[in-house]
Image 1 (tube, rainbow, N blue to C red):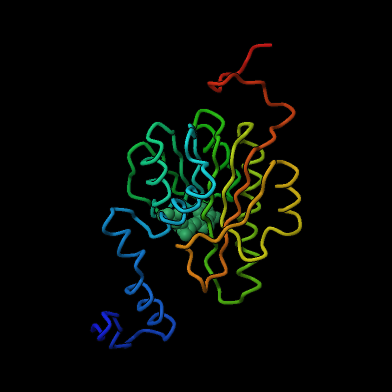
Image 2 (tube, protein in one colour):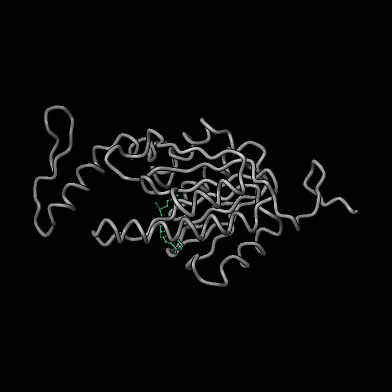
Length: 234
Ligand SMILES: C[S@@+](CC[C@H](N)C(=O)[O-])C[C@H]1O[C@@H](n2cnc3c(N)ncnc32)[C@H](O)[C@@H]1O
């Protein structure tokens, strides 16, 4: 590796690397968000996407119980703990995650039938925020990759609808044009506002977008709650 005149890092030797992995490495080494994340102690550059989404939509303030789907390596959970230190956080990922203070972590597939109950039990209360940065491993076939990631987003949206506290928020990574069809119908039926955003930290060339659904309308079976979130005996 060597630096070029403008301070850009170029990967000199491609030995054993595919052209695609050389491009990825060069992009990574020259990415200001990667350097900023390292300098500020965030585990991922993705941390900035959540920070930027929150700056626009203000869903973190006041959150008490948060579920982080696709938590590894932990940037989003770090952001939640930093900005709302009192919030209880549970996270799940296929990959192991180094411990994060105040976050309960599960290393398992969110699509496993047992996952929703485990997350609910660990949180001990209904979440007021469900965030999902899950993406399926790409196989290089755009339609397949799109469908696999959208299946994860749909499962995350159903989890949110079945568990969120009234007034809660659902934030999820989608692919461009991803919240059409059934997912959009589900979100429109259950949330008062649905916005799409591409935070500056999301690479321009990537097809990822984020959907931010706020004002969960609640479930008919959900007990009325007071301002502290405690159920009101009827
Ligand atoms: C972009 S990363 C998340 C980055 C994270 N938000 C952060 O800030 O550190 C996406 C994660 O989704 C996870 N993932 C993909 N499919 C999953 C599944 N079925 N169950 C749980 N996690 C999954 C991947 O393992 C990966 O770690």
